[in-house]
Image 1 (cartoon, rainbow, N blue to C red):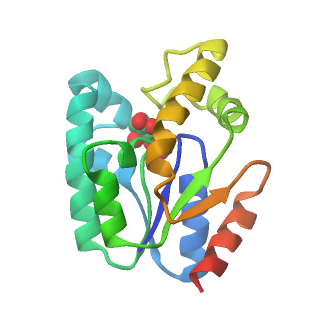
Image 2 (tube, rainbow, N blue to C red):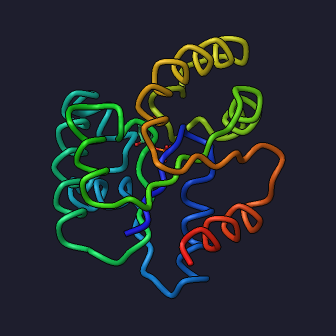
Length: 170
Ligand code: S3P
């Protein structure tokens, strides 16, 4: 199983779909699986049930997905590796774990235009977003950097990144 991790806006879904197309594997997105399971969008889950409920559901759906689907490309949510024993579980299922590593500048520029569907950041203004991402990424890097493969994504096309990962897989 190929697993993509990284901060919101690092390109996990876009790159994941390209890797799936190149390798002929099926693609799954953990956020989408959580939405199907809950019958609500991620934003609705946060507003109806709160983050703790979301994290429990995320842990449950992660576990089931890792156990049920041996040969897929799986894009996780930005927070998935950072809660409970999720990163242990991820690493015990696959050594093909790729951290898409983007700088604060890249992430802030991308997320400024697409924060509405992301409850962790949807309430933040432009300057607050930069400060939030800087601090949050610093905390989360501790988990992300346990990944066996770290792929720099700044100023690169999704196609180029997917090509690099596919070559590592071969
Ligand atoms: C989150 C990232 C989101 C989604 C949820 C929480 C996070 O996924 O799981 O909004 O804590 O970073 P993406 O990284 O796909 O935006």
